[in-house]
Image 1 (cartoon, rainbow, N blue to C red):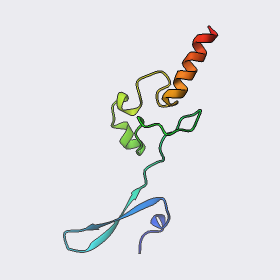
Image 2: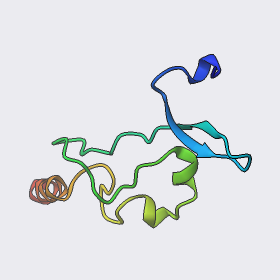
Image 3: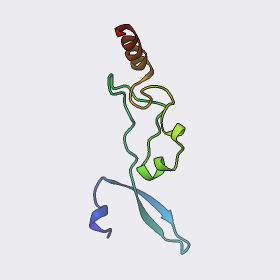
Image 4: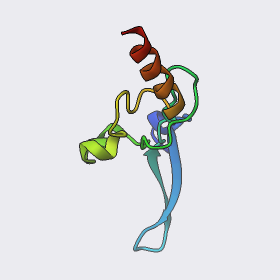
Length: 89
């Protein structure tokens, strides 16, 4: 029987074959949900999804797009915001 902390939906279960020939259930944390645009809710494609320890290993330019509001807003919303800022000057 698995430990009580593994008996919920938080962990993803995978069967692994061990050298002795038995199949053992391994538990892995699920991936977090995809990042979405703060304005329209569209999924941000350029932002990787992963656990914090996986994201930490990536370089800064791999974590988010290298543009203003990168990783916060989608391209269309970014264009709108920049236009709005430029027109208000």
